[in-house]
Image (cartoon, rainbow, N blue to C red; front, side, top):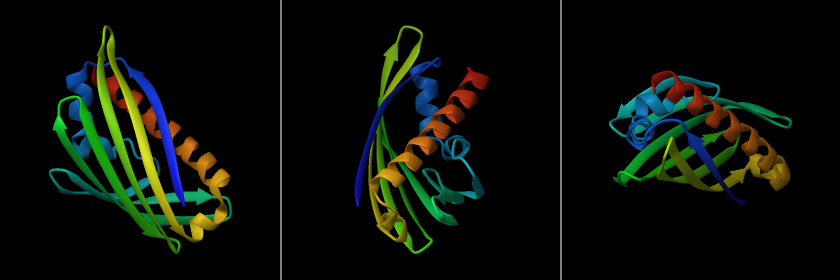
Length: 148
């Protein structure tokens, strides 16, 4: 099952600070809700167990994230996870746009979901993903607002 999510978020942090946050595994890991056993495995990779509860499925997924960037205004984060008889692959592109009072992030995430979780249906998965994305964005605001 293929899913796509897009959004925009304005942060009260300069573009250089937002870029450093998105390209630092240690920092980015702090934005992941319900993550445990977080390990930075390289200068651009993270591994973690993430607790998820989607409808009748409650499990921990093993997640691997990789950060790629070739420009100061564009960051790509890929994630793959497995667990609960399922596999999920996500690629998120973050475009950073300087604003007068901070940075606008335009983002697009493409997800591929296979296995037991995919059997829950696209509306259930979209609702879960939207709640999860909202938590990630709230965490990013908290982190960057504290350090700006």
